[in-house]
Image (cartoon, rainbow, N blue to C red; front, side, top):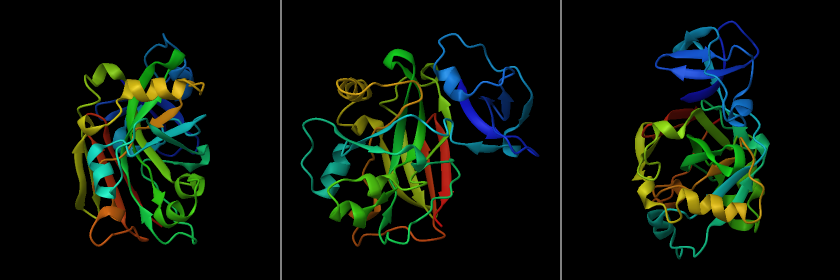
Length: 261
């Protein structure tokens, strides 16, 4: 099952439903994706449907309660930054207003001069800390702020710095989330090409680590880290500029693509 939030053609208010092949099928009871994530036995979508290419996809959960992120969680990425692989997960958060639709746009604040991309696998939490599904995200990062500020809230949590989607794919359709190919392109140039098999801390380990101190609720997001190939690690570094296009694809989960403005 693929759960999505979308705006049908000619409408202004979003609906929630399922993506089936080339169609967006709405929930006939008007429920949200978040409500479905919190329910263990919700019925399938059975409402009006539209061709997928005629709807506007929004973030599947437009305002999650919490967005947790894991830093330096790919071995090759730790190596390219010169960092020692961490002995336990490095956790930071984004604020809910960082969420943006999978198609963006991503807004670069005037105080940021070194904007970077990070293609990431998203884990979506369900009831009782279960895994409700998986998605694709860009952990947009202001490297200049990140380098000079000990806390990363501004560098990682600015408005629109978390485009994600295009939908939530439920676990029954993802046999092994720790063996998925992840690729990122900037203006059509392949920059990241790896697999989630390079994760240092796997999904279960990350969820258990967070749950030691945090109450994980349905609809919460965990961005599990980025592989090698980020702009700051290139020689010379290559940062994003207005008009650039970032495309991130994860095998079995779909594609998000957004512009920088």
